[in-house]
Length: 157
Image (tube, rainbow, N blue to C red; front, side, top):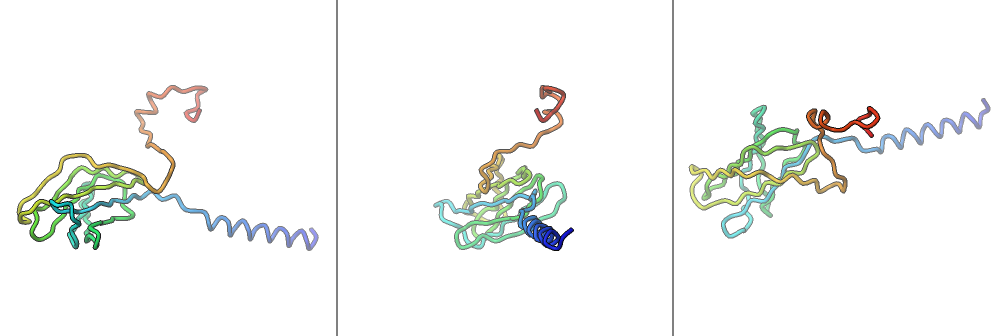
């Protein structure tokens, strides 16, 4: 090889290496967020929000900010419960929150006046919305694959 061919090959390898390092990694963790309000829909500041993984029993605690919002970032997929506590209000508890891969789950808590010893348990399902992507995706289960028609013996067609 000539000297110019070797130099060109080295330049191409450097450019490819730099380009690969800029590619984003595939993130599988999710985000759980929400707004904590009082009966008049005003933001509740410094409320203690606990996110508990029902499968592992591990809990993470955050405080709401000046705008009443909380955020749990990099949450592993699974089933969770959220508890919100603050002085002067009943304890808010929502169970069976399903967090899927790369999901943005929003759980808003409306607190009721009372004491922390009383618990308001919400049994509705949470909304999973992915705000940071324009794509649509779905997790394919084994049952779906069994019931899916196979054209040409390839599940990708």
